[in-house]
Length: 593
Image (cartoon, rainbow, N blue to C red; front, top):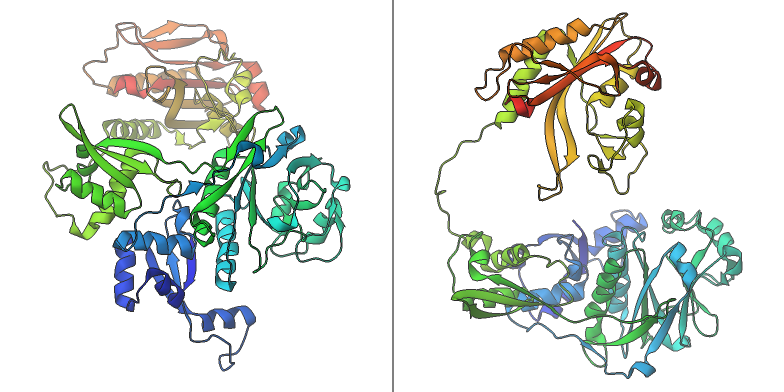
């Protein structure tokens, strides 16, 4: 979980009172965060590699290291943490964030060029007017950006934040993507101008920035933001320009977030402005910026509106196991910065919640349940015995699968375990099958070409295993009990799993009779009353992965197919690099259960 380091004295000043160590630990526990503390002396010694007897300024200041939930971006700085605790303890009401009333024609503008779609297509912006910084506030402002970059921004790959002194810039701004040799500027904390491609080489020795270079260095164009004088604001996601650097005297802050994920960019921008708008001249007021997209459409950011969520009172209290009236639930939700109210609809008590822009983690009614439980206190939830006693046990399918495994192993076959994902070629082309787009579940963004589809058969997996173990002495007898997946519109997720048994026999001769003997053995041991096999349960079939007239399907007495077997076609064996003949069987275990 992310850890926030804050000075104890400054935190207590923001909370309006002091706490003992035990009392503050108890408060953190009640709020659902964890506390660890250290001294600034220890931190400075570690950073500066000082000896234990060295003197360091600020030795006595206590630093609290507080672990917060990964999805609570509003708790990643002292400002948000102190505000949340004040609201939780009832010393402050939840603030209302406002957008400045500025005519559309007077807003600052950011023009997005079409070339940006090649690398980082999205940008969102906002302005904080009349900000008052001191050293502690400034450090917190910078630290929040670092925390967001490591967390929701995924090390700047999804979102990169740029903050600038607006008074040093001239609007309107433009977000462009240019070849590296066309971009020249003085980067932050440097005094000489660099060309963008040379800057990449320069930062390869920088311990902090070199880990971000890979995001854009191989791109033919680099993203860059200019003002109307062609002054570079930033080269996202690497570095800001020195010209617009923020200092303690900065009064107006321009914030821009470039991104590959627009939703996360909005969350990051909202987090930045809601945390530090309390230092603005007009408290909790943010000036909007109009983003003009390359297609001519216009969007105003940030969006600080609250969205509504509604849930029945019973759905909120039921999972917790407590009994409260609607007024108490409303009070608990207010403690968690959620403005709530109750009403009745068709005789049912319902809770309506207004979710502020700081609480991007609230996505579902279950999130309201969690916040009510935190505010009520987990330790206050009464203990109760379950209404019904149950004993954990294995699923019948898993128990039956193990019995099948044992039976096949006793027949001399060795079990293998393979990946459920395979390449499209192995699942179809290499088995002489055609993809009719009605069976296979396709992976949208596969990491490698070997994991493109979810397997629809175990055959390719066993043949691939055999290929990698082709030097073993003959005969090679392997089997697998595992799941395959096929598209299924009747399921809520659009696909269904199916447990299968597959066995492969490889020798100098095909061994067709060996596989038939295995099937006969399985048919004899299956004694389920709903599965009845007649005297003839082998029916000729015509599958492209087997030799013609050397294959059959396995059917029950009522004609239901439960498997198939055959001698693997020579063309299939050639594609997998297997020189010897093989016989393969695959059976539906669930049909036998």
